Every structure is written in C-alpha cells, then in structure tokens.
Image (cartoon, rainbow, N blue to C red; front, side, top):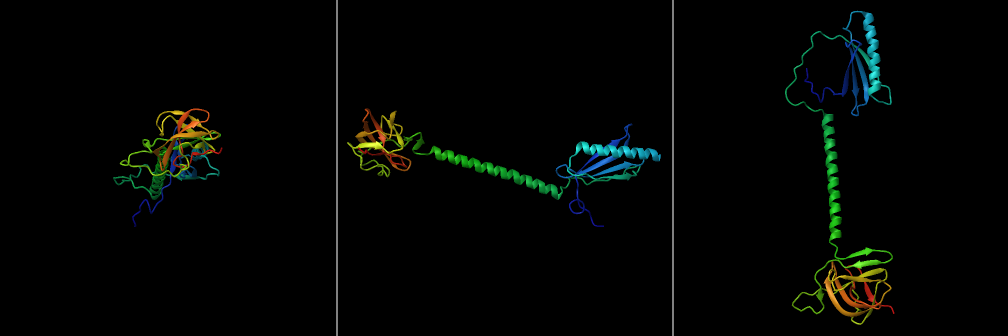
Length: 274
C-alpha cells in the first residue's frame, strides 16, 4: 500500500466540534461544522450516539432533541447567505477506543497554510517598502527646502523676496589675491551709482542695514510702486547658484538701505521708468 502524506493524499478541512447533551447532561450527539477560511459554515454533520439506550423510543426522542439543538446551535453561531446542509449520521462507538501513535517532532504544514503564510510575509514586506519609500521622499523634500540659497515667499498682492544665508559679503574692490565671484546672470548690468531704480513689478523686496543675506538688520521693504537712487555699492555675495549683487539705495520717501538686485533665480532691481 502506498504511503499517505498530509499534502498529497488527504486534504485538511477546518471544523468546529460541539458536544450535544440531553436534559440530564448525558451526551447524545456530536455536531461537527466544517468552515472555510472566513469561518463561514460549508457543511454540518450530526453524529447520533446509538448506544445511549436499547429502547427505540428513547433513541427516537434523543434523535429529535439532537437535531433541534444542532439546528439552534448553527443558527446562533454562524451566518451564511445560503442554507447549510446538516447530515444526520448514526454512530456505533466501540467500548475501547483505538489508540493511534503519532510521530514525534514538529507537525508538517499543509500547502495551503504555507502559501497563506508566504502571502502574509509578502504583504508585510510590501508595506515596509512603501513606508521606506515614503520616508525617503519626505526626507528629500525637507532636505531640498532646507538647502535653498534664497527663498521667494508669496504674499498678496506682491512677492516678498528675502535673501537667505550665503557666504560672507565680498566687496567689489576685493584684493586680487582673494578669489572673486563670477559675474551675476540675473542682476542688471545697466545699474550703477546714481541710477534711478525700482523693483520688478510683482515683488516686494526686503531691505537691510548692511549688504548680505544675514548682515545687519531688516529695516523695511521696497514695493513695486516705489523709486530709489543708487548711492553705494556694489557688494557681491555667493547665492545658491548665482552671484547676488547688493546696492545701497536712498528711497524717494526717505531712508537709506541695502537691496539685493537679484536672487539665484530672478531679477529684482531694474532701471526706473520715469
């Protein structure tokens, strides 16, 4: 006879077993409910004990009690859209049970259990990978925002431009032995001392007491409807990707301050349209 194995010769079915007794507490039947993976009933078997009495009337009464209680138990503990068949079987148990010796060691898992466990691990690994990718994405965004050389903050109705931290200010008369900054791409080359200037429409520029993104203190703002005269400069600082040119200006409304002519991305000061 060929050897039977749990994975190939038989198929395990999940089931719940209930012991049904009469009014005196004597077992009269056993109800076995076979369920699927969602614990939904598929089939039920009611095993009647025919050895409780030799009186046929007693056996018939016990049979009716067992069927009634089996039906009540199914209706009370399970849910299903369709009716569940309950097979009624008669058992004639031997007085002495048959002892089955089992092999020692860990029980073998069925293919279904192994596949389900592998699927669960795949779901866990997929969730961890998604969390890792999300964390890297957030880290990259925070790092990019933190490394910006200069920021442009939107306000209504204009944009307020504040120079972010850069290298120390470098004067235009820096000695030749020290490295000089490259010409600015975004600063207007037609601005010099004595020029009349205004801010590019749509922006509002932060003015400082000293040239540089963190030098001195903020002393006010220049809106796109104001005019000023250049009275000093230029002083260059290193921006994120362009040289920032600073001019000392005197506002028509009064007051002197330093203003950045550009950022690494946009032009801020332009000759005034008189």
